[in-house]
Length: 161
Image (spheres, rainbow, N blue to C red):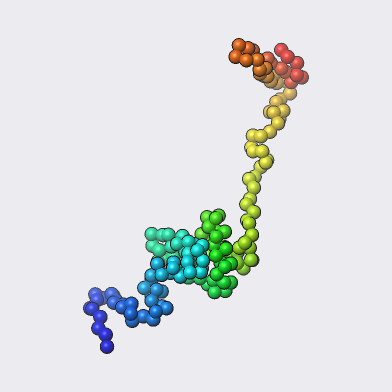
């Protein structure tokens, strides 16, 4: 028979030795043991678990880490480690994305990043003729050194003024 110290109303006293060895980490919310379990399946899985638990209230994110361990049992540690590595490279911390990558078997593929909208040269990379209006005067700088500071004007037909 074992006695525990008296606790206030609603309080409890749990002795680690009273729990089964494989359930102690879960029952006592042992974050370091959980991260070590994930790291045992691969370096990137351990880093991913640390990123998941990087929160002011890390015990609220423990279910996500347990959800990360599910695909390890289903697909094995190597594909999950590869998916975690790819997600860490892209700075995506979502167990749903890891599960989707593993379900589609895309954990080793290089992702195709979306291209910027618009023209390939940029927003203002247009031909200068697009900015001229009929009958407008266009200034042309004729290089000639520091002493020559003359600016010549041409009209829309290309004649000098």
